[in-house]
Length: 274
Image 1 (tube, rainbow, N blue to C red):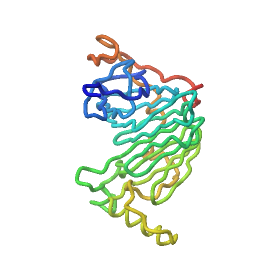
Image 2 (image 1 turned 120 degrees about the vertical axis):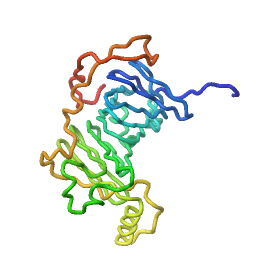
Image 3 (image 1 turned 135 degrees about the horizontal axis):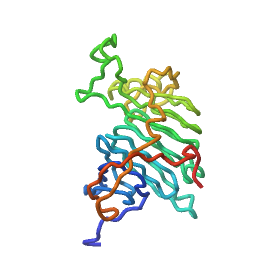
């Protein structure tokens, strides 16, 4: 209908916030979110450098975004009376988050997916942390410039890093898949698109399968690794507390905010909410 306003499925609500949070809609418009603002299917959420934000979705799942994160709600739909319509597709473009499974993930685990530039995460009903370390702006990693890694101390290689707190996930791309269980960590390092394509083609040749189109993600084969305390993997404590916010205006209006102390995340965060 001509002149009709943009409308999208409400996916969730902002329930904790420590600073500016931007939502970019699929139609190109943008808005500033505040406490109790609605998040819609199709929104891309962007946190600033000091902003933590928690979104509670309509199925009682939760996503906590760390500062300097870009996260897209690709498609989210939930109706308690219609399981066949469930959908939960997300993309982590930049930064990191903690995900707590809700009712949708409990009854339709296969309908949940979270993509990063190097892999896709699927769930078995769980709580997990994922962080994406971006390649530098010139498309090279520290290892590219220094194969001996002598100048890379304290720097993580570009890629997807995950830690499972409860339940199980799988980390997958065209080069492989691995299951990661409670208190385990895994990663899929970033590869330049050409290298990722060659790896996928080699795997297809070895398996005798027909050639496929270029992979949508540019990642090395996912792997489960030993967390030696090197700091490579995000600790769960990163998301244990977030600053609270005092709003200066009407709820949902995107007003200026100030930090005021800290707020403990809900107890029982590793449980599926019912």
